[in-house]
Amino acid sequence: MNHEHPSVPAQAPRFPLSKATIWVVNLAFTPIAGAVMYRAWKGDMPEAAAYAKRVSNLSFLLLLFVVAPVYVALGRV
Image (cartoon, rainbow, N blue to C red):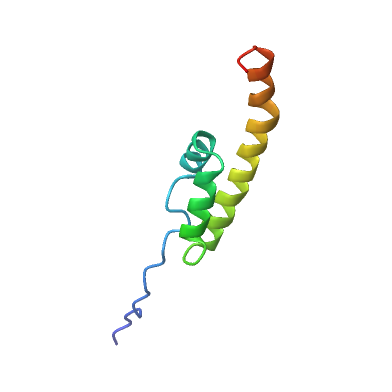
């Protein structure tokens, strides 16, 4: 008796980039990178799209409330 398993289609990866890479890209190119990743992934990889959107929002807030005040305090503006 032959017990072959039916072929299971390969699943798409949940995240096309590592989570660390998503953070680095969002920190470097906020908020454009998050929007681009979200639009590119929302149909095929909704979990990755939601993560990219969340990281983009957090990195923008980090830029706005941490980096910008330090930049102003150092007299760079």
